[in-house]
Amino acid sequence: MKKFLYITMVLVISLSFVACGSKTTADASKTSNSTTTTPAKTKITYTKDLAYLPTYNGVKSATYTAKTKKTLATSKYTLKNTTDVKVFNDYQAILKQDSWTITGATKSTTIFAKKGTHTANIIVQKMGKDVILMISSK
Image 1 (cartoon, one colour):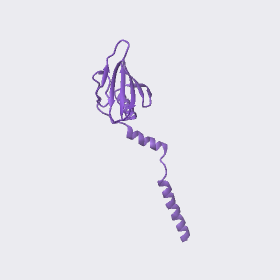
Image 2 (tube, rainbow, N blue to C red):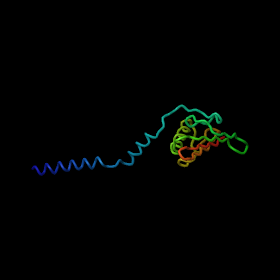
Image 3 (cartoon, helix red, strand yellow):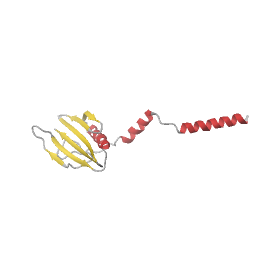
Image 4 (cartoon, rainbow, N blue to C red):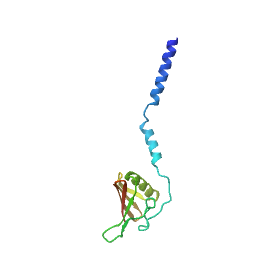
């Protein structure tokens, strides 16, 4: 009888160790990642040069080229100590929050968006520890 009790205890303890060391399922990991990367709704501010376009966290334009008959208006921003993936995801969320329609996107590189008569082509480029954000719009 004691052997049976010892064997049962060893099996229960072994199963608990195996269960504690198991990997999370794919669905559980997707759920936890999506809740940690979803940005909170923030107050949207707009660029000085392109008054209809939301800014990325209120940064100031480094360079601005006005729209002509043949070219779009262009703004260039340098974002210090961040990653291209973070800027891409955050700015895409800001645009969606401001009712822009994302018409196309290339992961962590470009966003094409439209709102009413306005269009915006956004390029995110990693440069060392910084990120360059270039926006061409009309």
